[in-house]
Image (tube, rainbow, N blue to C red; front, side, top):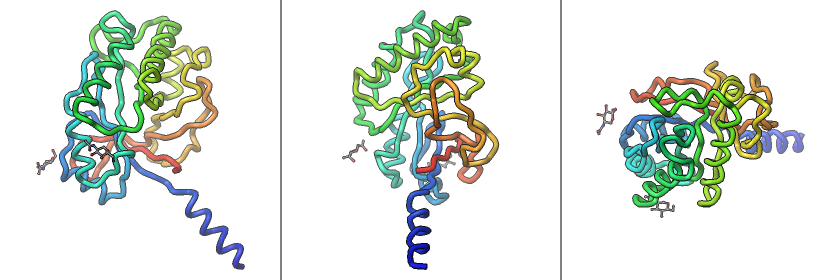
Length: 222
Ligand SMILES: *[C@@H]1O[C@H](CO)[C@@H](O)[C@H](O)[C@H]1NC(C)=O
Ligand SMILES: *[C@@H]1O[C@H](CO)[C@@H](O)[C@H](O)[C@H]1NC(C)=O
């Protein structure tokens, strides 16, 4: 009996499900407070535009989140890269973002690189998946050389069409954040691709309904 009670207590402690947000819009302190009250505890804020420029809203949004009560270590940024070096190299794109965030002493624990259709002019992914894979590798190296923790945002479908599926494993040992808008905070629907044997986080819905600001909703098991 005692063992059972202890075991179930342990299960509650280890399955510390966490819910978070990501957004491409500026967010003020009151909206972050509303999200905290809804049980969200981490966020990924866009810090680089798909058209190859910094997102100037990121530092203020992250500072507002911390002011509202989010832990600095629970704040992340995402970088929507402009493929594949015609406009700016991978290194320049990462440097621009990192330098801008450093100027404002912005706290973030991880940089997510966004692998999905890029609609911006002269920034779309190449039709050659090896070119795309090499470019992503350059982005990862650019972040690693600046001692950043990096993760990849991609669905199996996007990885197949942009990176050529299992041909490209440059992100395989990094955390994977994958989208599937089925409103199910679980990994039950996940299937391996691109060298990943398990995901880190799932974006399970593209609409946060409570606080009046456009954000996607994510879940992770710890
Ligand atoms: C915060 O942002 C929300 C959503 O844009 C807006 O409705 C609200 O008025 C803002 N609050 C303050 C105090 O600026
Ligand atoms: C970043 O985090 C550190 C450590 O928690 C804190 O001292 C600092 O004030 C934070 N910076 C900002 C801009 O919130």
